[in-house]
Image (cartoon, rainbow, N blue to C red; front, top):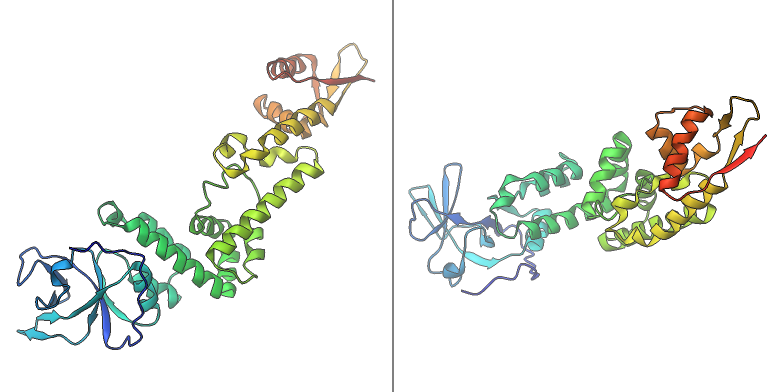
Length: 326
Protein backbone atom coordinates (compact mmCIF):
# COMPACT_ATOMS: atom_id res chain seq x y z
CA UNK A 1 0.00 0.00 0.00
CA UNK A 2 0.99 3.60 -0.59
CA UNK A 3 2.31 5.39 2.47
CA UNK A 4 0.20 8.44 3.21
CA UNK A 5 1.82 11.84 3.67
CA UNK A 6 0.02 13.74 6.44
CA UNK A 7 1.23 17.09 5.12
CA UNK A 8 -0.50 17.20 1.72
CA UNK A 9 -3.18 19.82 1.10
CA UNK A 10 -6.56 19.08 -0.41
CA UNK A 11 -9.55 21.31 -0.85
CA UNK A 12 -13.08 19.98 -1.14
CA UNK A 13 -15.31 23.02 -1.45
CA UNK A 14 -18.65 21.25 -1.47
CA UNK A 15 -18.79 20.41 2.21
CA UNK A 16 -22.48 19.50 2.03
CA UNK A 17 -21.76 16.37 -0.01
CA UNK A 18 -18.81 15.13 2.04
CA UNK A 19 -17.97 14.07 5.56
CA UNK A 20 -14.81 13.06 7.44
CA UNK A 21 -14.50 9.62 9.03
CA UNK A 22 -11.75 8.09 11.14
CA UNK A 23 -11.55 4.37 10.45
CA UNK A 24 -10.98 1.75 13.09
CA UNK A 25 -10.54 -2.02 13.13
CA UNK A 26 -13.73 -4.03 13.46
CA UNK A 27 -13.81 -6.40 16.42
CA UNK A 28 -15.72 -8.84 14.18
CA UNK A 29 -14.78 -7.98 10.57
CA UNK A 30 -17.74 -7.71 8.24
CA UNK A 31 -17.19 -7.22 4.52
CA UNK A 32 -13.73 -5.82 5.26
CA UNK A 33 -11.58 -5.09 8.27
CA UNK A 34 -12.46 -1.41 8.74
CA UNK A 35 -15.51 0.03 10.41
CA UNK A 36 -16.80 3.00 12.32
CA UNK A 37 -19.63 2.38 14.75
CA UNK A 38 -21.47 5.31 16.28
CA UNK A 39 -24.80 5.25 18.04
CA UNK A 40 -26.91 2.59 16.34
CA UNK A 41 -25.14 3.01 12.98
CA UNK A 42 -22.27 1.02 11.53
CA UNK A 43 -20.29 2.51 8.67
CA UNK A 44 -17.98 0.47 6.46
CA UNK A 45 -15.99 1.49 3.37
CA UNK A 46 -17.17 0.26 -0.02
CA UNK A 47 -14.97 -2.65 -1.15
CA UNK A 48 -15.36 -1.62 -4.79
CA UNK A 49 -13.54 1.66 -4.10
CA UNK A 50 -9.93 1.82 -5.34
CA UNK A 51 -8.78 3.16 -1.95
CA UNK A 52 -10.34 0.30 0.04
CA UNK A 53 -7.16 -1.79 0.30
CA UNK A 54 -5.05 1.23 1.20
CA UNK A 55 -7.10 2.17 4.25
CA UNK A 56 -5.61 1.62 7.69
CA UNK A 57 -6.96 2.07 11.21
CA UNK A 58 -6.87 5.71 12.40
CA UNK A 59 -6.86 7.05 8.82
CA UNK A 60 -8.85 10.24 8.39
CA UNK A 61 -10.70 10.20 5.08
CA UNK A 62 -13.15 12.27 3.05
CA UNK A 63 -16.25 10.20 2.25
CA UNK A 64 -19.48 10.86 0.40
CA UNK A 65 -22.32 11.53 2.80
CA UNK A 66 -24.81 9.54 0.78
CA UNK A 67 -24.22 5.81 1.35
CA UNK A 68 -23.62 3.52 -1.60
CA UNK A 69 -25.83 0.95 0.09
CA UNK A 70 -27.76 0.57 3.35
CA UNK A 71 -28.35 -2.86 4.89
CA UNK A 72 -31.09 -3.44 7.46
CA UNK A 73 -31.18 0.30 8.21
CA UNK A 74 -28.03 -0.10 10.30
CA UNK A 75 -25.01 -0.88 8.12
CA UNK A 76 -24.01 1.83 5.67
CA UNK A 77 -21.51 1.31 2.86
CA UNK A 78 -19.67 4.57 2.25
CA UNK A 79 -17.70 5.64 -0.80
CA UNK A 80 -14.22 6.86 0.18
CA UNK A 81 -13.04 9.90 -1.80
CA UNK A 82 -9.54 10.51 -0.45
CA UNK A 83 -7.44 10.47 2.68
CA UNK A 84 -6.98 13.83 4.37
CA UNK A 85 -4.21 15.32 6.47
CA UNK A 86 -4.80 16.72 9.93
CA UNK A 87 -4.58 20.21 8.45
CA UNK A 88 -7.20 19.30 5.85
CA UNK A 89 -9.50 17.82 8.47
CA UNK A 90 -9.23 20.84 10.75
CA UNK A 91 -9.83 23.28 7.88
CA UNK A 92 -12.83 21.33 6.57
CA UNK A 93 -14.43 20.97 10.00
CA UNK A 94 -13.82 24.68 10.58
CA UNK A 95 -15.86 25.36 7.42
CA UNK A 96 -18.71 23.23 8.72
CA UNK A 97 -18.06 19.76 7.34
CA UNK A 98 -19.60 17.02 9.45
CA UNK A 99 -17.47 14.18 10.79
CA UNK A 100 -17.54 10.92 12.66
CA UNK A 101 -15.03 11.12 15.49
CA UNK A 102 -12.72 8.31 16.49
CA UNK A 103 -9.63 8.62 18.67
CA UNK A 104 -8.53 12.00 17.36
CA UNK A 105 -10.60 14.58 19.34
CA UNK A 106 -11.97 16.43 16.30
CA UNK A 107 -15.02 17.65 18.24
CA UNK A 108 -12.77 20.08 20.12
CA UNK A 109 -12.43 22.08 16.89
CA UNK A 110 -16.13 22.87 16.84
CA UNK A 111 -16.25 23.49 20.59
CA UNK A 112 -13.53 26.12 20.28
CA UNK A 113 -15.06 27.76 17.20
CA UNK A 114 -18.47 27.93 18.90
CA UNK A 115 -16.73 29.40 21.98
CA UNK A 116 -18.16 26.66 24.15
CA UNK A 117 -14.64 25.86 25.28
CA UNK A 118 -11.59 28.09 25.64
CA UNK A 119 -8.65 27.28 23.36
CA UNK A 120 -6.54 26.89 26.48
CA UNK A 121 -8.81 24.21 27.92
CA UNK A 122 -8.94 22.48 24.54
CA UNK A 123 -5.18 22.32 24.30
CA UNK A 124 -4.95 21.02 27.85
CA UNK A 125 -7.27 18.18 26.80
CA UNK A 126 -5.14 17.52 23.72
CA UNK A 127 -1.96 17.31 25.78
CA UNK A 128 -3.48 15.06 28.46
CA UNK A 129 -5.43 12.79 26.13
CA UNK A 130 -4.64 9.18 27.17
CA UNK A 131 -5.18 8.08 23.56
CA UNK A 132 -1.89 9.73 22.60
CA UNK A 133 -0.07 6.68 24.01
CA UNK A 134 -1.25 4.41 21.19
CA UNK A 135 -2.70 6.57 18.42
CA UNK A 136 -0.18 6.92 15.56
CA UNK A 137 0.94 10.39 14.50
CA UNK A 138 -0.74 11.98 17.54
CA UNK A 139 2.14 14.46 17.92
CA UNK A 140 1.53 15.68 14.36
CA UNK A 141 -2.17 16.03 15.15
CA UNK A 142 -1.35 18.06 18.29
CA UNK A 143 0.96 20.27 16.24
CA UNK A 144 -1.75 20.94 13.62
CA UNK A 145 -4.30 21.56 16.38
CA UNK A 146 -1.91 24.01 18.06
CA UNK A 147 -1.64 25.93 14.77
CA UNK A 148 -5.46 26.02 14.52
CA UNK A 149 -5.75 27.30 18.09
CA UNK A 150 -3.25 30.06 17.54
CA UNK A 151 -5.03 31.19 14.37
CA UNK A 152 -8.25 31.27 16.39
CA UNK A 153 -6.55 33.28 19.14
CA UNK A 154 -5.19 35.72 16.58
CA UNK A 155 -8.62 36.24 14.98
CA UNK A 156 -10.46 36.48 18.30
CA UNK A 157 -8.04 38.77 20.11
CA UNK A 158 -10.70 40.59 22.11
CA UNK A 159 -12.26 37.33 23.24
CA UNK A 160 -8.83 35.98 24.22
CA UNK A 161 -7.94 39.25 25.91
CA UNK A 162 -10.95 38.83 28.19
CA UNK A 163 -9.86 35.25 28.89
CA UNK A 164 -6.39 36.47 29.79
CA UNK A 165 -7.74 39.16 32.10
CA UNK A 166 -9.91 36.62 33.89
CA UNK A 167 -6.99 34.36 34.77
CA UNK A 168 -3.93 35.96 33.28
CA UNK A 169 -1.20 33.80 34.78
CA UNK A 170 -2.79 30.44 33.96
CA UNK A 171 -3.78 31.46 30.42
CA UNK A 172 -0.37 32.95 29.73
CA UNK A 173 1.22 29.63 30.58
CA UNK A 174 -1.14 27.97 28.11
CA UNK A 175 -0.20 30.42 25.35
CA UNK A 176 3.47 29.66 25.96
CA UNK A 177 2.62 25.97 25.66
CA UNK A 178 0.80 26.67 22.39
CA UNK A 179 3.90 28.43 21.11
CA UNK A 180 6.08 25.55 22.32
CA UNK A 181 8.12 28.01 24.40
CA UNK A 182 7.75 26.67 27.93
CA UNK A 183 11.21 25.10 27.99
CA UNK A 184 12.82 27.86 25.92
CA UNK A 185 11.77 30.54 28.41
CA UNK A 186 12.71 28.56 31.50
CA UNK A 187 14.70 30.58 34.00
CA UNK A 188 13.22 33.95 33.02
CA UNK A 189 10.95 35.61 35.58
CA UNK A 190 9.35 38.16 33.27
CA UNK A 191 5.82 39.67 32.99
CA UNK A 192 4.88 37.36 30.11
CA UNK A 193 1.18 38.15 30.48
CA UNK A 194 1.76 41.86 29.76
CA UNK A 195 4.16 41.11 26.91
CA UNK A 196 1.73 38.69 25.25
CA UNK A 197 -1.26 41.00 25.64
CA UNK A 198 0.69 43.75 23.91
CA UNK A 199 1.70 41.50 21.02
CA UNK A 200 -1.83 40.14 20.62
CA UNK A 201 -2.84 43.58 19.37
CA UNK A 202 -0.70 42.98 16.29
CA UNK A 203 -1.80 40.85 13.35
CA UNK A 204 0.54 37.91 12.87
CA UNK A 205 0.58 34.22 12.19
CA UNK A 206 1.95 31.56 14.51
CA UNK A 207 5.57 31.77 13.38
CA UNK A 208 5.57 35.58 13.31
CA UNK A 209 4.08 35.82 16.79
CA UNK A 210 6.60 33.36 18.17
CA UNK A 211 9.46 35.29 16.57
CA UNK A 212 8.16 38.65 17.80
CA UNK A 213 7.72 37.33 21.32
CA UNK A 214 11.27 35.96 21.45
CA UNK A 215 12.67 39.18 19.99
CA UNK A 216 10.77 41.21 22.59
CA UNK A 217 12.11 39.05 25.41
CA UNK A 218 15.67 39.33 24.10
CA UNK A 219 15.19 43.11 24.05
CA UNK A 220 13.98 43.12 27.67
CA UNK A 221 16.88 40.96 28.83
CA UNK A 222 19.40 43.18 27.06
CA UNK A 223 17.85 46.27 28.64
CA UNK A 224 18.14 44.76 32.12
CA UNK A 225 21.82 44.11 31.50
CA UNK A 226 22.42 47.62 30.17
CA UNK A 227 20.58 49.51 32.94
CA UNK A 228 22.07 47.31 35.69
CA UNK A 229 19.58 48.26 38.37
CA UNK A 230 20.73 46.89 41.73
CA UNK A 231 19.47 43.33 42.16
CA UNK A 232 17.75 43.26 38.76
CA UNK A 233 19.41 39.97 37.78
CA UNK A 234 17.28 38.17 40.38
CA UNK A 235 14.85 37.50 37.52
CA UNK A 236 17.34 35.10 35.93
CA UNK A 237 17.86 31.48 36.94
CA UNK A 238 21.10 30.54 35.20
CA UNK A 239 20.69 26.84 35.88
CA UNK A 240 17.29 26.69 34.15
CA UNK A 241 18.54 28.92 31.32
CA UNK A 242 21.40 26.53 30.58
CA UNK A 243 19.66 24.74 27.70
CA UNK A 244 17.90 27.74 26.16
CA UNK A 245 18.92 30.37 23.62
CA UNK A 246 19.20 32.86 26.49
CA UNK A 247 22.23 31.06 27.91
CA UNK A 248 24.38 33.46 25.87
CA UNK A 249 23.63 36.15 28.48
CA UNK A 250 24.89 34.04 31.38
CA UNK A 251 28.42 35.44 31.34
CA UNK A 252 27.23 39.04 31.48
CA UNK A 253 24.68 38.22 34.19
CA UNK A 254 27.35 36.57 36.36
CA UNK A 255 29.67 39.53 35.82
CA UNK A 256 26.99 42.03 36.88
CA UNK A 257 26.15 40.00 39.98
CA UNK A 258 29.77 39.93 41.07
CA UNK A 259 30.41 43.63 40.38
CA UNK A 260 27.27 44.93 42.10
CA UNK A 261 28.00 42.81 45.17
CA UNK A 262 31.62 43.93 45.48
CA UNK A 263 30.74 47.60 44.95
CA UNK A 264 27.93 47.63 47.54
CA UNK A 265 28.92 49.46 50.70
CA UNK A 266 28.81 47.73 54.08
CA UNK A 267 28.87 50.34 56.86
CA UNK A 268 30.61 49.09 60.00
CA UNK A 269 29.92 50.96 63.21
CA UNK A 270 32.93 51.99 65.33
CA UNK A 271 31.35 50.82 68.57
CA UNK A 272 32.92 48.02 70.58
CA UNK A 273 30.11 45.66 69.59
CA UNK A 274 30.39 46.15 65.85
CA UNK A 275 27.25 46.26 63.76
CA UNK A 276 27.21 46.02 60.01
CA UNK A 277 24.68 47.92 57.89
CA UNK A 278 23.98 45.56 54.97
CA UNK A 279 20.91 47.32 53.54
CA UNK A 280 22.64 48.00 50.22
CA UNK A 281 24.37 44.63 50.07
CA UNK A 282 21.13 42.70 50.54
CA UNK A 283 19.60 44.42 47.51
CA UNK A 284 22.12 42.66 45.27
CA UNK A 285 21.60 39.18 43.88
CA UNK A 286 24.20 37.47 46.08
CA UNK A 287 23.29 39.57 49.11
CA UNK A 288 19.68 38.53 48.74
CA UNK A 289 20.75 34.88 48.46
CA UNK A 290 22.80 35.11 51.68
CA UNK A 291 19.92 36.81 53.49
CA UNK A 292 17.56 34.00 52.50
CA UNK A 293 20.03 31.27 53.44
CA UNK A 294 20.55 32.80 56.90
CA UNK A 295 16.83 33.61 57.33
CA UNK A 296 17.59 37.25 58.09
CA UNK A 297 14.35 38.62 56.71
CA UNK A 298 14.33 42.43 56.50
CA UNK A 299 17.26 43.02 58.86
CA UNK A 300 19.32 46.05 57.83
CA UNK A 301 21.99 45.60 60.48
CA UNK A 302 23.70 42.41 61.57
CA UNK A 303 26.19 41.58 64.35
CA UNK A 304 29.69 40.15 64.11
CA UNK A 305 28.60 36.52 64.40
CA UNK A 306 26.20 36.72 61.47
CA UNK A 307 28.68 38.74 59.46
CA UNK A 308 31.26 35.96 59.88
CA UNK A 309 28.80 33.59 58.19
CA UNK A 310 28.52 35.99 55.25
CA UNK A 311 32.31 36.11 55.05
CA UNK A 312 32.29 32.30 54.88
CA UNK A 313 29.96 32.28 51.87
CA UNK A 314 31.76 35.10 50.07
CA UNK A 315 35.06 33.30 50.47
CA UNK A 316 33.63 30.15 48.91
CA UNK A 317 32.35 32.16 45.94
CA UNK A 318 35.56 34.22 45.72
CA UNK A 319 33.70 37.48 46.29
CA UNK A 320 35.10 40.58 47.94
CA UNK A 321 33.38 42.69 50.60
CA UNK A 322 33.39 46.49 50.50
CA UNK A 323 33.53 47.39 54.21
CA UNK A 324 33.56 51.05 55.21
CA UNK A 325 34.12 51.98 58.84
CA UNK A 326 32.08 54.92 60.10
